[in-house]
Image 1 (cartoon, helix red, strand yellow):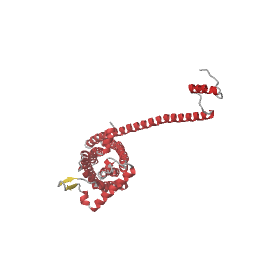
Image 2: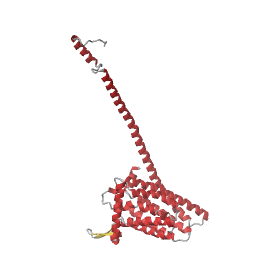
Image 3: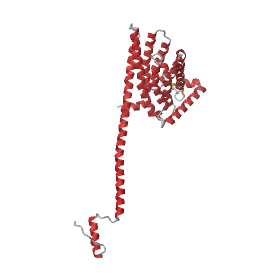
Image 4: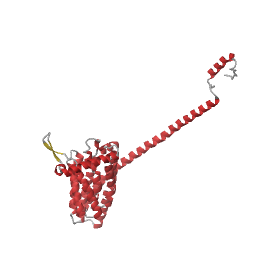
Length: 346
């Protein structure tokens, strides 16, 4: 269309001028300065939306990549936990029987060092895996206790790792009897936050402690009489577990501070037996099996403590570690959090 100059002051040309404007739809009916301002605002808004769109995508992608890396890292930890457990069992079993052979003393010393390293190293993925369960459940005690499992074994040898681990074992096992006493308030021990979890856990521990003091015999006994069915059942209520935790912590700290194995060793044995017996009485295959193997571990460790021959003691100690490592894996995997985590690793 050719350009025309239309005089709108002429009434005769008004209609044609209006028709021209309508047909072209390119000449805005507003002042030039207003048009420019509006265009600038629209351009600014468009750029802002465009920038927001571009910035969101990298942020979202970065979060997805971070989650994937974290998931792969956890899968590696759980894989390492599984195979380090197997390696630990094999190393301790072979090392134990090598102590009874006629190998030179220097060779046995090297075997002892190798088995000690494998045993200590196996607690690293075990502790990290347990920490993951504590994070999933927001259980501060479980998180701190399993963090101790990563660190504390490095302070000992095959002869006293069991005793030194009393500190972290006593703390991390709190989840087991507190989960059973939460009265369904927090399903399977999952807490909404670490503070709420710590408060609930301390509340349950305080309740169990008071009941243990007021009625020690009935609370400690795992056998309860069911009045409805009129029969005796194994129904451990957690009191043994709490007492076990307290004695475990005292025995470990006492040994680390004084080095008196003959004093704090039997205390650790007593503490373990209380928790192990309660664990073995539960209606859960993994917990029951773990409890039985824990009893075997503490029995071996008790016997080894009173043996004079180093080779014989190491033989018993290594068998103790082999049984205990299987028990630890069963105990940790009896947690509902472990089952949920295992399903996501596939």
